[in-house]
Length: 139
Image (spheres, rainbow, N blue to C red):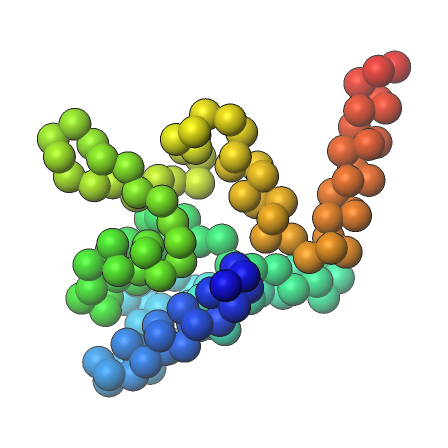
């Protein structure tokens, strides 16, 4: 399943979980200390960026932990539904990888994972930016 479909399915599941608990989106967002727009982005599986470009949500592990807390769900349930890797900590508990954590393979997969999430059009834009940066660094 591609990642955009995974986010849409996650959003539907999240909305069902919220509704089962009798929460309105606004109330759930307030309890999680996130904006209603952030919660909506999670439930729709996308967010609007500058210029009307649709992006996939990329919530921090901290935000997902707050969402899990509001819905009284194990954070692992949310992380597994969005395909976030988890890594064991020394004491045997599992800690979700944050956005700034290195990928466990150590091969730069974090940026590769992010690039895979982009549409072909967005990849062309990023490629152009990288080319510009490389040209400037060679000067």
